[in-house]
Amino acid sequence: MTPEMVLLSITLWEQKLMPELSFTYAAFRYQPGFNEFNKKWRLSGIQKIYYNVLEKELGGFGSSPGKLIWPTGVTTTPEGDLVVKDSGTGHIQVFNPDGRPKQSFPYGFEPIKGLGDITCMRNGVLLVTNGTKIIQLFTKDGELIHELKSPKINWPYSYGIAVLKSNSIAVSDWNSGGKINIIGVDWRMNAVLKTHAIEGFHRPVRVAVNKEEEMLVTEGQLFGRFQGCCIKVIDRKQSVSKTIGPQYGNKFTFENPSGVCVDHQGNVFVSDEAQNCIVMFNPDSSLCAVVATHGLQGPSGLSVLGHGLVAVADCYNHSIKIFRYR
Image (tube, rainbow, N blue to C red):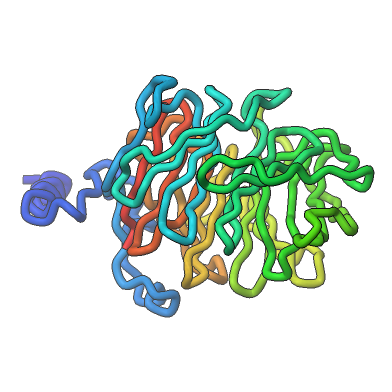
């Protein structure tokens, strides 16, 4: 028996006894640098990393409640509900923690399909961008509270959105190559106070904020590898302090990174729409691991659910998939 056959037999035996460790033989065989447990992960709260462990799938093609056509953004509420922005129907779908459809309401449509994102504030208010100069504020029950708009907001195409600890908003846009706009808001009056642009980006897509209030920005590409294809880290002084990629790990390269989120330990998750995978980095990006490589077509927005779970908007499969990573 060859070493490869022995390895395959051992792997299949482990899968039979421990299905939660169901990474495939192909992944194990061809990604030796990724599928090794590393003691250093314990520093970021991770002791054992799971691969391709699909816990739950929500949605399926359709426009009725609970169904999705082109899900692109996903976030969670303080109560644990999962909220999905569906660009295919122009609706926001709310699922309870068990995955059952709970609420559906319209937000409108984007001038360019697929632009925009969704995030949730600490008070449960949903913030929605749709590729315009307007930021919509909804309750999770679907009531439109307000539309943030001001002459100070001068970009044509909004995309990703995140809330800083100061309650300012970070919004990415593709104007003049790409910027991250920091918006100061008076939330009592729902009025824009000031805006500040951080320049030097190439097609910035989505934004996430870690506990140090650093912003992590994905730079994707729609038409092949040009500039970008990386994650840029903006420090508290609002300057780019670090770039992750295009090459990362053991000879892996980002092609079209899209979604990004951070868990409570500071580990960073990135979806790559071209590679159809989800990658996880530890807080200082010195270690990385693949969380999901199977069954994804155009993975877009990401959100951490807690209890070692991460949700991804699986755009071209018309669904939300929830994977276990710890």
